[in-house]
Length: 71
Image 1 (cartoon, rainbow, N blue to C red):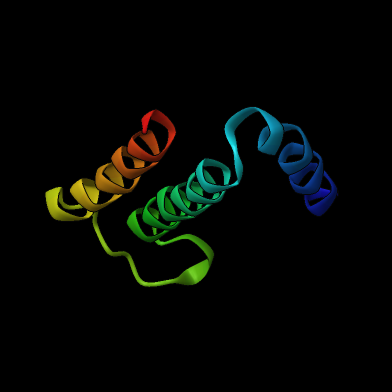
Image 2 (image 1 turned 90 degrees about the vertical axis):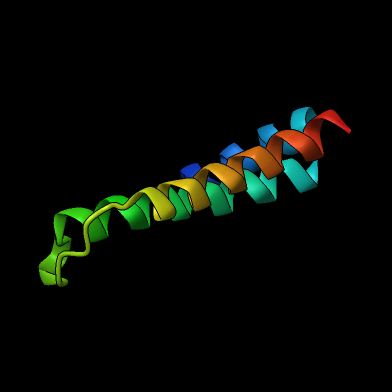
């Protein structure tokens, strides 16, 4: 079910945003979710708290997506 929603979202987003921005947003989403899962220690993983440096890294990926879209 999740894979189907993922593919449908890509089919609708690529014509509107372009392949580059869509790919970067997918990667950014994966990074944000990974940071959240690490912070809370989900699925039995060791807890790795969210730091300013890790937040800044995720913000830079999102800024990169904005730059790709605006240029």
